[in-house]
Image 1 (tube, rainbow, N blue to C red):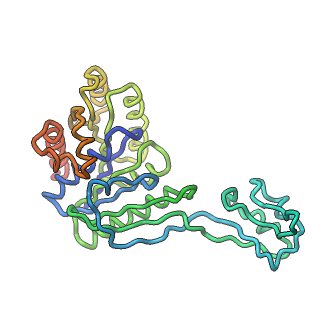
Image 2 (cartoon, rainbow, N blue to C red):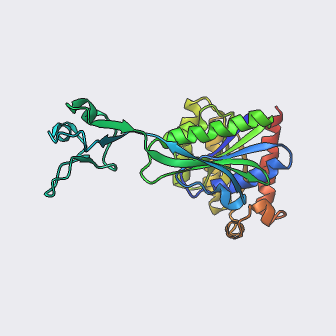
Image 3 (tube, helix red, strand yellow):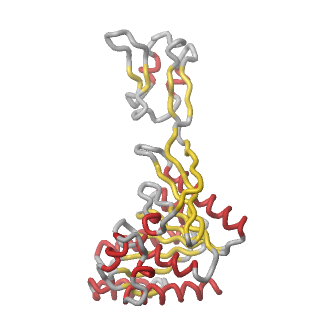
Length: 297
């Protein structure tokens, strides 16, 4: 069983559009499991027409709570807190309270309280889901606003996808990763068999490629590059190709810029469905053929 993750140095490169098209092509040849681990803004489902099978709560972090019955109003917790998360009594004489948005879960107030009136618990930080699609099972998640540990949620979604693939003996897990190089990306890429890096032919795109390549290299994950919207700047596209040649990074192909991709998204379809014989679909088919050769090896 192989795990392929699709990444980009930033949002807006067309990563999810490319991933959706590759999923369409992969599903015609192999039984696969799909994971969308961009937990802050999962949108792969917009073009896969998923039907939800199950949902589960994701708890993470630590949140303090003051028992008003046990609190002696000594104020020691307020003194101990370095995040201004303890709200002292107001004019109405209400007990000390915790500001949930300010609390960092450091437990300083718990240890400082002389009467044991403060405890901590893991708050709900989001949800994760399993859905059925025409291409295979889809696992994805939503991190609540202000929710902690997006990296943990990414890991959870990946684990669920991997376990499903093992249980069903499906040979491929295709993962639409988050943009950037932060903790969610680290959780998405570590342990993967291949990273597909979608890059734009721009100055920032080339810079972002270097950053995400540093991440995949650090974790020992081989990377291959896809240049999207390549004809926006032939010179920049060539620079990216030269950079990849110098660093022995395979370039799988170039995808031309075409507003037809936006039209397909508006219709809730991937580009292979929407315009199977167009230039964009042809380029992605050629890219998938090279990925298929890699999978065969």
